[in-house]
Length: 199
Image 1 (cartoon, rainbow, N blue to C red):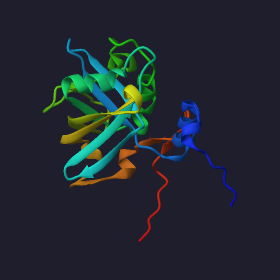
Image 2 (cartoon, rainbow, N blue to C red):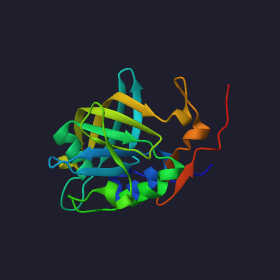
Image 3 (tube, rainbow, N blue to C red):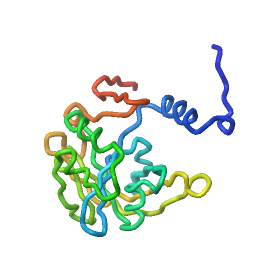
Image 4 (cartoon, one colour):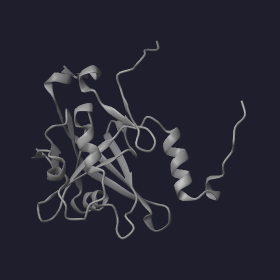
């Protein structure tokens, strides 16, 4: 098998992104809800997201910067110390894509995407009512990555879960009912319906 080798420190940032985001697939999508100090809502998807521990229950996501400011979601999670993760199913994938656009810092993406914001029961951050499951999280730590915090890694502890009865069987999730989607590269997403088992 012939392989082309790359030294990542010799590549421009867009090329690093294309290679890495094309290889690390499929990636789960963290649809992150935060609230501004004036009470307005913010919602944005992050495919640099994952569950990293169940004890303590820990998730993380990372975001870069807009040309003129840090990503709103990362900044708001840092300011408030809380956020929600909303699972992206096939039914809400189009709305998720709408919230991925770049908007001014004071825009409510819930309203633009026609979504219902419901308050967290434990944290002061909005959840997507239409999502089949929501996680309420408390920020544990934010780590700057790269020179001058080009990207910021947000580590959060999950302190409450809300799961649709339609996808819940005791404490097991019915993946056929959840119909989660994942992120590939570019504008490509993937269904999670085609699965196989290995003993």
